[in-house]
Length: 92
Length: 145
Image (tube, rainbow over all chains, first blue to last red; front, side):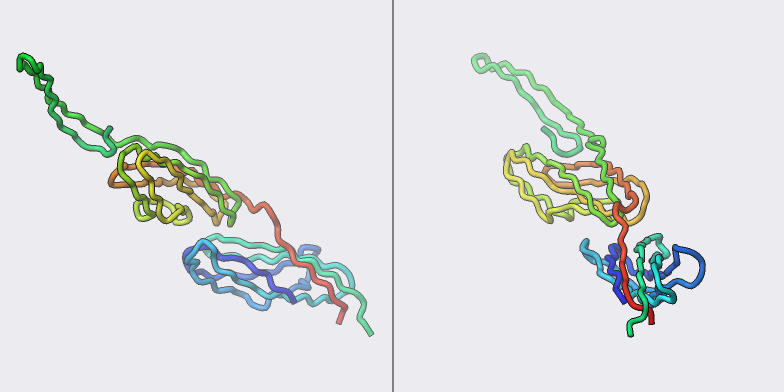
């Protein structure tokens, strides 16, 4: 599991919708976000507010997986992150 | 030199010392608001910051203090620094206009500095947010099961 950290700069509170999509074909994505939404408080300074969302990698097959994480707010803010996964044979 | 808009009235007397003859002129000077001083382009990739310096001149013989409350800015993501600028007589100093766009868009806004001594300074800001320059990524590695 890894955390995707991002900075919210908007001077009003909002809620980001989290979406993970597979980009290397159809079917269930090997990546999962731990939450469906991320609430963000208003950024009072120009440094913004640091937020994060945990992404879990749960591969079903051996090999490479690709996906994309998208966070969108109703105001039109958008953050995206490419996800790369590599799974190997089970260890004894 | 008039720093602020308004009507300035004065009397000018030319006098011949030896004879006492004189002539009087009543002078009315109407000073109007200046047009937009500059157009400033502030273009940046979204969530990154761009800034540009603007020089303010103090042509008077008195010290002038410019603080942030004297600025009126038409966009909440445009900021002016420093918080306070002190200009000694006949000195020029720079303040910085910063913009951090949050969305890919293009707009214009006005920035006005109203100083009680130096008068009004108007700027038109052309603001543009462009697509992010970098794509973030996360890499995972694990054994099946």
